[in-house]
Image 1 (cartoon, one colour):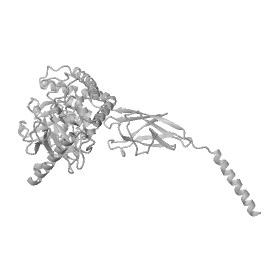
Image 2 (cartoon, helix red, strand yellow; image 1 turned 30 degrees about the vertical axis):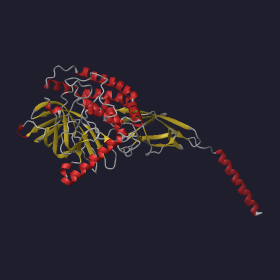
Image 3 (cartoon, helix red, strand yellow; image 1 turned 120 degrees about the vertical axis):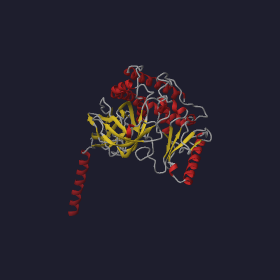
Image 4 (cartoon, one colour; image 1 turned 60 degrees about the horizontal axis):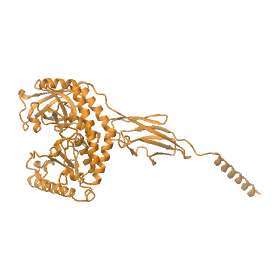
Length: 499
């Protein structure tokens, strides 16, 4: 009887539990509770970005210098899963391109969903309409007359409340090739002690670009901005400054990093290589002409002259052999599938986008064409450099003459022609150009306006200092530059279509 009673109670309990289970529906909770892009997961950030969730919109402000591609979001929700393009997302792990139309879908346990649309606003940091002033005083008030001999000097930087001020000791000399022979000289400075100047990573070696041939005084800055928008590694920062030497105003300059191998510049010190292709061919003894195309290759790093002669010669021969093997590979009919590890084709596509968009005639010679190779990795094109003969320069005094200038050869016997000769690289070039034109080109035009606002007063002082009274009105020049870029973008569309 006792057993029978126990069974009855057990039956009642099971029926009750089953009834409760039927009465308890699966949760329909499906809300996104928080959304961030945190610096802990995104190396380009200096601080966390917190989004506002407004009804079913994720509104987020992304600094332009960070760039919205491939960012990792962290989020909380009360649903079962969060998905993007039907792929389950992991907070603090999953990457997405915020340039694209992006939706986050929160799925409830019962299968219902809530869709959130990302509205990413790309913001530019506010800029003051003044520029820092650099004062250099050379020992004995000597004048800089050489690209080879450094002169001792002191340097003082008035950051104008925008950048930190600085005072120290340095050395200074001339620099450049054709630009050195212009009335307004470019310079290279080497601090006695490493320092962070104008907010840039601390180093000893810096450059002052004169831009004497550039009537806008901003074309190199525009080119470097394109490189940064493409997220090209080791692209230089450009900061406009006024320069005085020995108490005399020298004009409006661009302050930038020296292109060199170091932990804060081209970070390939551990067994890497840095090469330059340049018809000036002026850095003996460690230079050579490639076997097939006779490319003028100069070894910038490692610094072979610092090695013992036997080691230097062995390293030189190995680098020469490797480059000739690379050149041989790009002429194979099935390149790059025959050896996809010989060169990074994304770097090729980006390098050509920035140089073709700016109509940089330098790379056709080639001149100032830089390449690097980290240890046990392929060659990469870059960093970009030297846009003195870009933007349809006429070789005398003005730019912006033609939208349709061809700056590289696509023949089967040319360097860039071979790099673009296969369908894989062509497709990558086309897709990356399409994304750049759609998402970044409008930001470039805005950058031009902002940079112009900053340097307008400095530009006028430079015009007076160097007797450039024949220059057009500054704002007319800026409009001309922007219209030229728009026209050049149409050329790029045709170039891509014809590949």
